[in-house]
Each structure stands twice: as structure tokens, then as C-alpha cells.
Amino acid sequence: MTRAITLRSVGKTYGRASRAVDRFSLAVAPGEFLVLLGPSGCGKSTVLRMIAGLEDVTEGELLLDGEPANHLSPRERGMAMVFQNFALYPNMTTRANIGFPLKLENPRQDSAERVESTARMLGIESLLDRYPGQLSGGERQRVAMGRAISRHPSAFLMDEPLSNLDAKLRNHLRAEIAQLTAELGVTTVYVTHDQSEAMSLGDRVAVMRGGVLQQVSTPREVYALPENVFVAAFIGTPRISLLQAVVHAPLDGPMSIDLGRQRLALPEPLSPDHQLLRIQQGRPLIVGLRSEAVRIAPPSQARPGEVALSGIVEHAEYQGHEALVHLDTGSRPAVVPDLESARPRQAPRRRRAGGGVFERLRQRAGGSVAVLDKPVTDTEPYAVRGPDRPAVTSSDLVVRTGPDLRVRTGGQVPLLVDLAHLYVFDHSGRRICPLPRDVPGLDG
Ligand SMILES: Nc1ncnc2c1ncn2[C@@H]1O[C@H](COP(=O)(O)OP(=O)(O)O)[C@@H](O)[C@H]1O
Ligand SMILES: [Mg+2]
View 1 (spheres, rainbow, N blue to C red):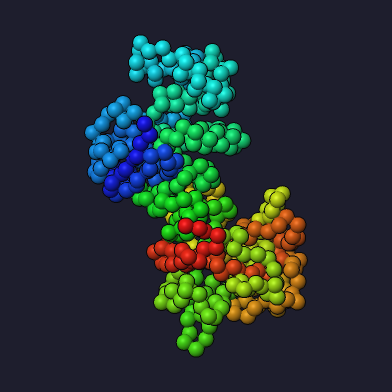
View 2 (cartoon, rainbow, N blue to C red):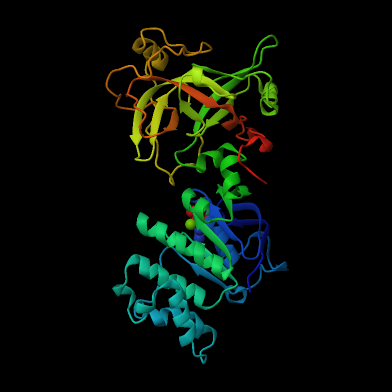
């Protein structure tokens, strides 16, 4: 029987150390595929192990199908775990490995048929008489999965089961896991630090940071409506560009967002989101721009809701179907602690003495570049040839373009920012904009 798993304000402290998990509340519905996502050390495995009964719950309550379960032994909970290290018995064949939990459960029962049907389901019938040493990594992980399934568990608990595999196999098995769990309809809690894995597998994704749950939502919603700057930065590739910003709301003029060297003018009449920004005037804020929220185009091509900005091309990553252009807009990137370890680090940002990017912008375009509140004019070239690429990138904005757009390193390009995709977070990191109803394409 598949189970509802509920955690009510659950906490975990190891010895006298600081808290690994803090006031964690979550309800997983029967048959749901829930992904626990977060950087290494944020408490994901601890939560999973408490659900399995492998760790005591220090405080709070665990319920299975609505019944208190803190005191139940792992076996009484009837869940199956799959770990990163496949942990097969090396001296047992695939057949014996898959059948082992069945033997434990009922030594006299003939498990042959259950083992065969499980192997069929996973496409490993031909491997039944091999030993783990004779299997590839992917095959071993399938056998581990088979061992978890054969017992018809009440829930699957998977802890980074694909982390040890190469990228191609990982994607392949990811699809298989999705299909398999959907077929079996068993409640699954799946731990990963890989946001793309989380997004592609989860019915819902629970994002954790430092032992604290940040947000639980559908993949679409954690992407489109991150509750805070941490979730915004953790979800999505390339990472959202985060810029330090201040709102200007003069009594006698249009409102704008100051990004340091340039400003985003907010068109009148203000949208309900942007009205909320008025009270933030003068306070330090963080603006978030995903790579698809900005395009390289002159102001004359602006659609309603798009405003102009400009940037200098630091470098472009050609990816075949698209290109990612790293730009320097002269703003200060906002730093979000705890993000690292799971994602590749961006090159460190170094400010040049004297003038910095603003001065370079001016020099390269012969002093005609508009920064601050002067718009870029249409007559300016897309790309001005500049000096060789600097050793250390100072890009603060990544823009996604078609693969055919030619940009030159060091060149200045006009940008259009889609305000409907503008994220604004307050100084504590909480999202202010957009309001839920203003996210295009998000239903429900
Ligand atoms: N058995 C343990 N004893 C002491 N501290 C632990 C133990 N297991 C985990 N921790 C600590 O608890 C925190 C959360 O760990 P873990 O749940 O393994 O994180 P994750 O799975 O997200 O990487 C970490 O700071 C880790 O060092
Ligand atoms: Mg872990």
C-alpha cells in the first residue's frame, strides 16, 4: 500500500552539534513523487533517513497515513531505500540480490516469480545470473532498484541514486525512474542536489537550505515564482543573474530601478507589482533576471513591457541550438550564500581601479554610450570591436540568444528587458515581484 508521509515541525540535532534539520513540515500525498533539493549538507539525507526510521526524530512528529510513526522501526514502516552507493552483495547474483529482501521477509516463500517479474520490468532479465562485479554502473543501479521494488514497498526513498553515474546514463535512468514510479504509483521521496534532475522528476520540489525548508511547489512554480532569492538562484540553468538595485520613486517623475551604472525605467501606468516597489524606495534590493528575460535588440524593437539597458560582451558560449552571452552592465552582483558546491562556480568578479566598466563602455564607443538614465540609441552599432577579452570576467548578466546572432567580445550591445519577467527581492531575500498572477504562462 502506498502511503501518505507527513512531517510536522520535525527537527534533528546530532549530538551537541547545531541543528541539521529545523522545524521541517511537509505533507507527501499517496503516490506523489516528491523531490528534496538543496546544496550538499543542507539536511536532505537526514530528512530521508528520519522518514525511513534510520535516524531518530529529535523533535516534531512523523505521520504515516495519518498515524504517529516516530516510534516505528524501519521494518514496520515497510519502505525501500535506494542509495547513491548501490550496496549490492558482491557474492550474490542479480537474482539473489533482488530476492534477498523477499527472503528476509519470508524465508519459506518462493520468490522466483517476483524476482523475474521485477527483472522484466527493469529490462535486466539477461543479467539475473551475473555477479555485481560483472555489471556496469548503470546495470548495478538497476539491480539495486530491483531490490527496492521486489518487495512492493509502501514508499520509495531514494538518496541521490544516480550521482555516481555518468551524465548520459543518468539521464537515461532518470527517465526510467520516472516511468517506473509512475507505473507502480508508489509514494516516492527522492533526494538530489541536481536541480535539473529535481525539475524533470518531481511532481513537487521541496527546496532546502541549511536544514530549513524554503519552498515546496511544482517545478513550474519554483521556477516562475521562487519565494526567495535562494530558490531563484538554485533553480534554473544558467543561473539567474542577480544584481544589487535601489528603487527611485520621485514624486514628480517616473519610477526607475537603479542598477548602479544604469537604470531600468518603469513605464507608466505602473503595474500592480511595480506599485509595490514604491514603498521600497531607497532600500537595498536585489533584481533577478533570467537569461530569457533579456534579449539583444535595439530600443526601436521594444515590445510593450520591455525597457532598454546596455551591456558589454564579456564572452559568448555557443551551445549549438542557442548561445549564452555573458555581459557586463556595470552593476554589482548580489551574493547569495550557501549556493555553492552543487553548481559550477562563476569566475570571480574583479573591479578595475578607476572608472571600471563605465569608463570602458565610454572608451570603446567613443564616449557616446548612454548609461544611467539615457537610453541607447538605435544608430549605435551592435558590436564595437574592443580589446582582447580580459583574463577575469566581470559579467553580471547572462542572456540567451539564438545561435546565429553574432556578438563580439568587448562589443557593446543594446538590451531589452522584459519587465513581466523581472524579479525583485527585498533585502532579506523575499520575493516582492512578480505577483503570482503576473507570471505569464503559469496556470493554477
Ligand atoms: N551522523 C551524523 N553525525 C553528525 N552530524 C551529521 C551526521 N549526519 C549528518 N550530519 C550533519 O548534518 C547536516 C546535514 O547532513 P545531510 O543530511 O547528510 O545533508 P545532505 O544530505 O543535504 O548533504 C550536515 O551538516 C552534516 O554534517
Ligand atoms: Mg545526502
